[in-house]
Image (cartoon, rainbow, N blue to C red; front, side, top):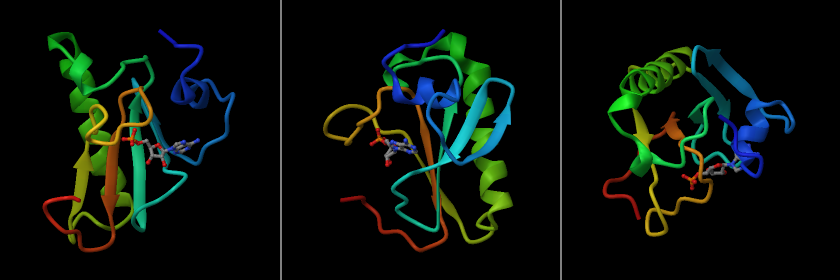
Length: 116
Ligand code: AMP
């Protein structure tokens, strides 16, 4: 199901261009337009899901697909050995700006913890 006002739904529908690096099954991934590290990709479900707070038991296989895609992207970009971060921002305090579930895959440099 698509949300006509959703930016990522428009990318999935190829109405807005993106640097797509993964497209299989129920998920697609593209490079973040404002990368925070040498690798910064977003893995998103093709069906519109608002965010991680909207995930329920019916999304179990989707979550496996999302994380599996993220792991493959990290390997393809050569950061699987050095390490990478997978992030789901939920809501205002986390800085969520796009309300279509997306898993950030960030790597290629050392990262601090906790995040600012
Ligand atoms: P979040 O803050 O978790 O909602 O992350 C949204 C991410 O989407 C940000 O890192 C943005 O840089 C990224 N973004 C926004 N518009 C685009 C776009 N057209 N193509 C790729 N990434 C985008």
